[in-house]
Length: 362
Image 1 (cartoon, helix red, strand yellow):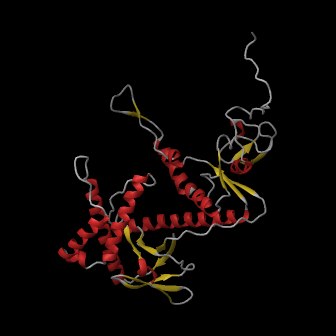
Image 2 (cartoon, one colour; image 1 turned 90 degrees about the vertical axis):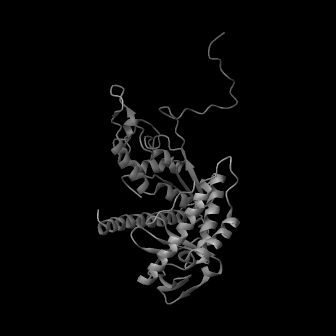
Image 3 (cartoon, one colour; image 1 turned 180 degrees about the vertical axis):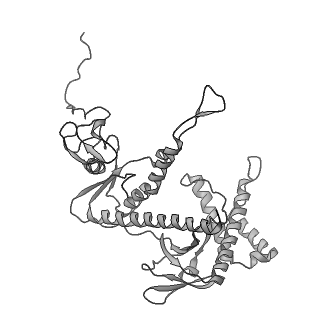
């Protein structure tokens, strides 16, 4: 997504929210139809039948007819694509869209190209049933066939174009880099609720900005980029409750609060987003390395021991005395692409031409 900040007037913001309400209502109605299906019933209506039903609904309800038919039909198309993605196994099950959380709609076709540049910093876009809305030119407007208008929880409006950027070419220097994604080093009333939402929105903006800048910098400076092959979804799961055998219905402490803090650190540092953008920008030059024991292995002498990792930030090899930041030492191991075994050291290689040795004598 290539996003731009929009600045609608009060009247335009009211019209935009009305369009969001229409798109959300159409989506939820389509979801309700799909959710009512059971094995003993006929197939639920597909997009063509739902589009016909939408035409009848617009003729019967004034509030629906007052909105843009393009926005409402596109909501049906988006739902149809969401169902196909769900059955294909690439996306999760479609969910209900709620007011205040899912505020947005999409414009496709010729209407998506109605954009006029005003000057070096500003442009405007013609949104159906809303009019010309100004937005900030923070970058060049891409040549896209569709755009999406969204409103976040902080009340900010954005114009997002769906484009696939070209991969960044390799610098040709032959250099390899390893990236260790760490936690400690990274990467009430309505008025109060809005203030808190703005803080979270700014934190999200900073995280996305860091991911984009860091991934672009790495893709431009290194020919090969290696990261740990981490299972982030499993790492950020909630701990399972531990029933107390002595007191039925009660549970033992499971360090839920401590794990919740770690989960926020993992998700807040954008581990998955960084790896995803690196893979997109450095196509064919991105590799994932087995993360086993990379933080306990010395990058100099290859000795592995739990005692090498003194704490979260300090690495000190008990064998050769090498000292470094723990994340830096792990990044060197990742850059080398080392696969560390579960034993104390990597087992010696055995020639494939060597005859097999019997475990016991005859």
